[in-house]
Amino acid sequence: MSLGADFQVITFIQTRDRPTAVAFYRDKLGLTFVVDDPFGSVFDQNGTGLRITQIEGFTPSPHPALGWQVSDIQDCIRTLTARGVAMKIYEGFGQDELGIWHAPGGTAQIAWFEDPDGNLLSLTQV
Image (cartoon, rainbow, N blue to C red; front, side, top):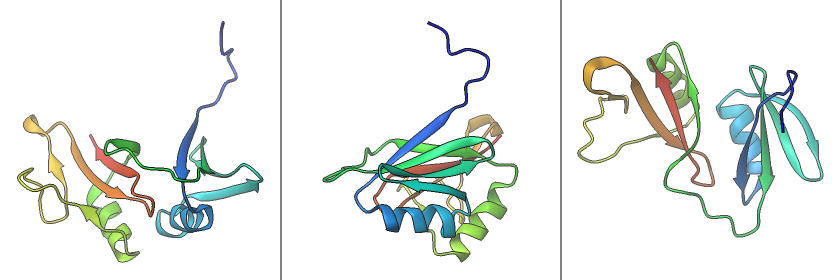
């Protein structure tokens, strides 16, 4: 089997409350809304699709579900916190005042936050 040369990646996030999730990803994260259909809501992430599907009784994983590599993590965090998004602070992890964890050797900076369903999301700057 081959995906062929013209495939595109699409990511999925599950929610218990699709209207609340759509508002979060559109208004708080600033993703471009594309379309709603009976089975989900689709956003564009610079050419990669994000499909939000409602699952009754959904329970999020404690591990990151989705993340974005950004060029200026501090600016992204300041923008998100101004929109009401709280960075997740892990006790004893050594994150800075913005919630950024600096990988040993300075190769990456990572920050985490949750969507309204508790899906763990991340920002990474390399």
